[in-house]
Structure formats: C-alpha cells, structure tokens
Image 1 (tube, rainbow, N blue to C red):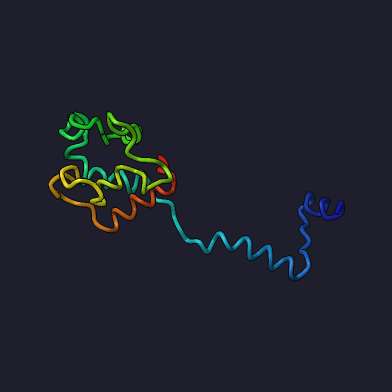
Image 2 (spheres, rainbow, N blue to C red):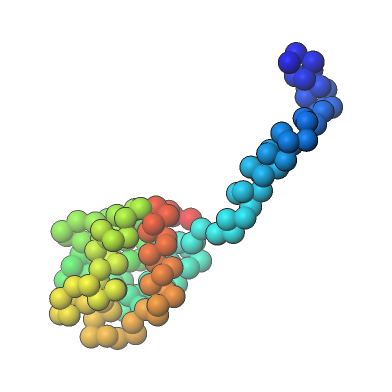
Amino acid sequence: MLNEMRSIRTGRLQLMGGSHCIFVLALLCAGCSQGTVPVSYKETITPLLTEHCGRCHENGGIGTQQSGLAMDSYEQLMQGTRLGAVIHPGDPAGSTLMALVESRTDPAIRMPIDGHNPLSADEVSELRQWIKEGAPNN
C-alpha cells in the first residue's frame, strides 16, 4: 500500500489487475453515458419566459399588477406572487407555474392568458426539466 501511494505521488500510477481496471473504467464512463445537459436558465428559460410571459409579467405589466409575479429577473421569478412561490425547486408537479402552463388549473387563470402564444410541448418539457433540476440560476 505504501509503495502504491509513493507511485502515485511520484506520478507513476501502476495499473491494477485486469478486472479492477475494467471496473474503474466502467465507473468513469457511466457518468459519460448519461448525456444529459442541464437546462440553462439564462439560455433557455429566460427567452422562453420573455416570449410567452413577458407581455404581462414584466415590471408594471398587467399580470404583475394583478398577481405580484414579475419575471424580469431570476430573483423576481423565484419570489413568486403575493400568495407565495410559483416554483418549488425539484418539484415540477408541485410548482404552480407548471400547473398554469400545463392547463391543470381553472381555465380563467390558465397561462398564458386567453391562450395567447402558448408554450409548445418542448418548451413545457424544458421548463419542467429545469424545475426538476432544482431551478438553478445557471
């Protein structure tokens, strides 16, 4: 064991026996095969919210006036409405924003309002995934 540690310190890494080496390689590659790239707030979610929600939920917009939900910044989005958070990081099913865009609410409060410029299935999926990933400010 001491000789192995010395080999590592001096930059000479001796490979383990065949089966151990394969096991280590399998562990290293397991993370590579996932292939999932986190959804970016800045690159994906911000443009999505601007396109579909910005008309009403910018500072001073009618949606902001009525609900208190402004979407001009990550901090405002995460603050939510006067009634509380609309995003629960890690819990898309429990996030009010998802219920609103997935039409799981009363039609009178479905978003975007009056069916104006609804999110595509792919956009809903991206939003859901971002929330599932913890809704990071990335």
